[in-house]
Amino acid sequence: MRNRRPVLIAAVAVSALALAGCSSADSTETGGADQPYRVLVTGGISAQGVLAANAETSILAAKAGVQVQNAVGGIGGRQIELTVVDDAGDATIAVTKLRDAINKQKPDLVLNSGPSSIGAATLPILKQNKILSFNVSPTEDSTNPAKFPLNFDLAPGAADNARGIVGHAKEKGYTDIGVIHGSTAYGELFGKEMTSAIEKAGLKQVGNEEYESTALDMTAQLQSVKNAGAKAIALDAYGAPLGYVLQSMQRLGWDVPIIGNTSVSSTNLVANEPPNGVLGTPEMKNLVSQVFTSTVYDPDNALVNQMVDTMASLGTISSTLIIADNYDAFPLVAAAAEKAGTTTDAEKLAAALETEEVQKNAKTAFLSRYNFTADNHGPNPNQDEMKFIAPTRVVNGQFGNPAA
Image 1 (cartoon, rainbow, N blue to C red):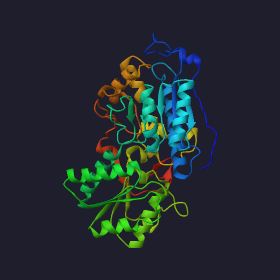
Image 2: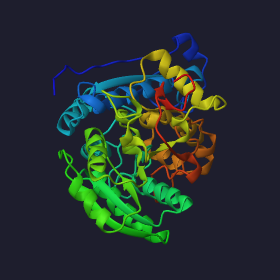
Image 3: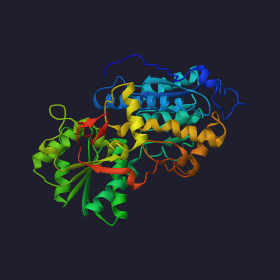
Image 4: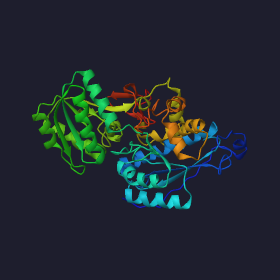
């Protein structure tokens, strides 16, 4: 992994003249409408491979969200100022950079770009400093308001993904399901949630195998679930491990449906033809992957198309929109500020985000609706937010675009 100096980018989308005309939800508060609403987003800009591509897309989504929200008045009349910090995809670096940023000037809001190790390392610091945050890298307790009262997960977590996969399996009539997952924190949690979801749905789990994320061959794990009688596979694989799993399936000559979770659909291997991917190869013939409505092209979805067009106008969308969660942070906070009457009180903003009124009014695009509650700060998407598709070429982060 190469080192690079931290990248700091600040952007204010409209002029001070426009600022003066915006109403303020907290004009009597110190640092009100005459000060920018400061947002920090971290990402692995100097990382390698899929991690770097996903970080670029995540950060680009944040920039697009800022531009769109600033054009309609910002957050409670305060224009948004976005600072981007390179955490190299490394939790230790992320912690150091976050502490440095807080010491220099405490941000109003902090976002990250994953992976889950970043969320696990930085959420305690954000809690200690009473900073509102949105997380795109779910951990086992990131949605627990008793543990992190000011954090909200934008990315559906392992439980959401497992629920969606089991629902799809039931629709297809798959009853005997084998689970293959990585040794990452998310992968292990996904394995546990699949066991629970399969049981609740009245289906049968036939094997639940974990592979080391550094492994180059998953034949043994696949053979185990095959021998157990699996008629379909629920798969967690992110980055290079996805290719090794598919190669191992070919070596076994095993012809069964494979249902990939969002880790699979966020890996560019599925959207690129050889030599950079596996699209169009025999390895892909049985694979469908889990995506969200916004990840599939729809010419009639105005909010999603605004997000995509804005992102494309600001830079290259390097990976699928499965990692564009950060776009939604800004309409969510804007709606919360309107209800709470403040942009500076993180606790009041968090309480507002838990209400149906805010969730309904926020003009979000990555997910059409968030369902935060006082007991659970996960997005809890409805089943119709999820789709299962055979991967195609990607245009501007979306599958199914006829321009491909």
